[in-house]
Length: 83
Image (cartoon, rainbow, N blue to C red; front, side, top):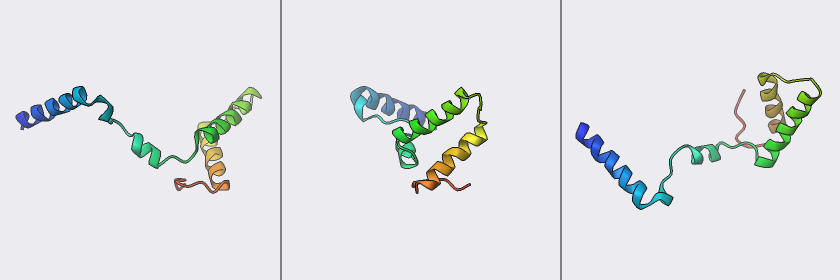
């Protein structure tokens, strides 16, 4: 078993060296499939939350989640997780 692991690691290293552009590590494709907001929409929500904070009316983490959820539901967004 140990020998198989050595071969797997060496194949992985060889692939990294020979084809660095083809290497995909992480959850990028999964994250893209489960994305609810565009970058612009996310920035708008962020600015809205920061505006509350600037007015000394900070929101809790739970309130931020509820705000994002209600925004997604009101705009008929896809990939909205169930509460």
